[in-house]
Amino acid sequence: MQQLELADCYGHAGLSPDAANIPLRIEPFKTIAANLTRPQIIDAVRAYFGLPMRKDTGWLSDPISEADEAFSMVTNKNEIAILAMALIAHQIREEDDQFTALVFLVANAFGHRKAEVYPQFVEIIKAAANDLALSTRSSLDIKLIRAKSLNKDLGGSAEELVPQNDFPSFNRVLKELNIDGHEMVKHLAQQMNTALSPMKSEIARLREETDMLWWLVGGESRLVDESYADMKPGRAAFLIGSELAKLSRTHLGPRAGTFLMNKALREGRTDKPSKIKIEAIPKLFTLEELSDVTPNSTIADVRDLCSVNNAISRASEVGSQTAWKKMYGNDGSLSETAAFSPSELANQSFREFLLLNALSS
Image 1 (cartoon, rainbow, N blue to C red):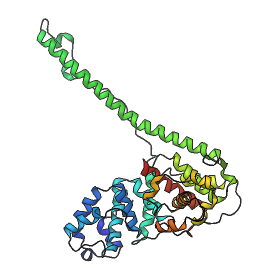
Image 2: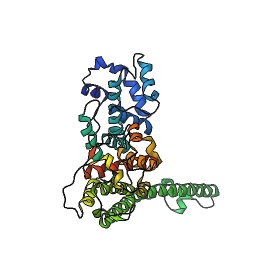
Image 3: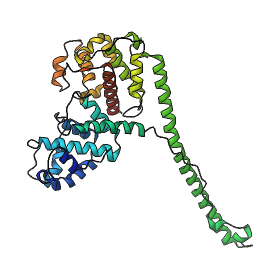
Image 4: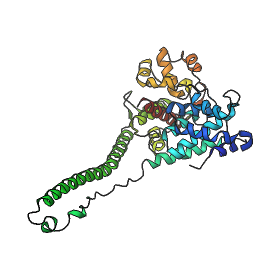
């Protein structure tokens, strides 16, 4: 990801360093960035997209107010979005944080949410997310196991180490051998752990890839016991995204995730896909099925961001495929008329479920 310092973010927003009081922001920003929690990351993403922050905002305002008494969360709304952008950039560039990239992509929802400042930042994060997804699957450097060399004081023949009838020297050598033996065992254990840890990760990655390939070959939803090819495109897209997310072991999923979902969507279809509105998604499932496909309880923390899953959740909660819209609207989710192509819907469902899985882990 390209480097974006705090001053760069202010510049992209059209503010000069003098007008932005950047010298008064640098140290507080470092303090904030060093202690970010997941709820705070989610709120930073909300701020960037102009959504209300849900948690206590003291984590952001207090350090800045201590350095600049004129700072206000109310009158400096545009600056809050700039600071949020800088925090997001820091987390992804400096910390290689997949979680931050995932929250950002979920909130953007394929362009349905617009940035408060510097819209080009969205494309920067998309590219960075692709790089992060690939980096977790790079070749692992499995180090060779090397035995620890013998203590140089214990080299030589027995006569050189222990002169005849020199019992104090004999006791000393035994102690040194005991110490050196323990050090060798400790060193060997560390070497084996160094070698086995990446191997375990590699095995998990291979298992994930195998499970995904079998899922793709099967072409059937385990949740509703129905072939994706026999479903309406919107129903298939939602289920394909949710079920692939269950097989993913990383926050962003595999780099080939979009390809796998598109492949599953295209199987057995020749008709040109049309866009699906959010308000139509709950109608694609029976009331009994809604309870099976509804997300877990962590949706309560991100109803505004996870709009597709929130529609399903609210419909299941009220027990109706149509009477959920008022509750949904009060959650701050996307407009119920927001529409996705089947590919976009599968990806949005996939990312939302990845986020919900991350929050529940």
